[in-house]
Image: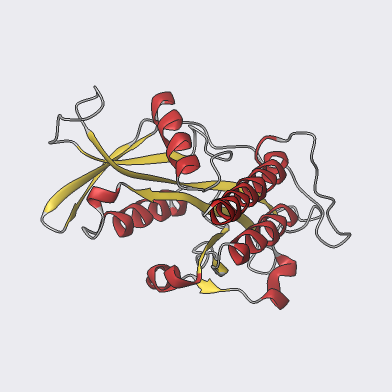
Length: 246
């Protein structure tokens, strides 16, 4: 019995250590900290600026009830980071100017704002594929990442996740700076079918070279952790929308 408990403790400790190493590695990519990823000669890192925070609120009808969306507040960010950490997901890249919150405006049971949070997510900027590019094109697009997607457990199976992805992509596609960027994401292999209707396709390891180095590093670190935990990590990408300025 004592030996079994010892093995369980060692297993949990190893998981915690791996998660700590993963988040520490991602810390440099999320906040520009002391850990740096050295880019290859063909894909140097290009710094990007974050989008300005807006107070946009939109509404969708889904599964018999109305879902509303708003830009995050500072308390939303704190809640999202705490939630991500409790779910063994990376909380470090969550930012107020990119996080979007799904809520039920008719429910006054939640957070003092008069709305009940259903979930949240963000599309955050990454980088251009090449530092020599003066503009994004179909052969040399910029890249953004769909990340931190989460639906409150009690609200799942109601279509909130799909509505949230649709809202995030809609905001992205109407953003003058980012609408010509490809959108990539990391997800478990079992959830790949969820993203396919939104024109996301799995990227093979052989085709990862065109993606930003910081994202490739995140994929590598996440793959190691996922394998240890018995899962498979997949990288998916949605190409830039066709240009209408022709």
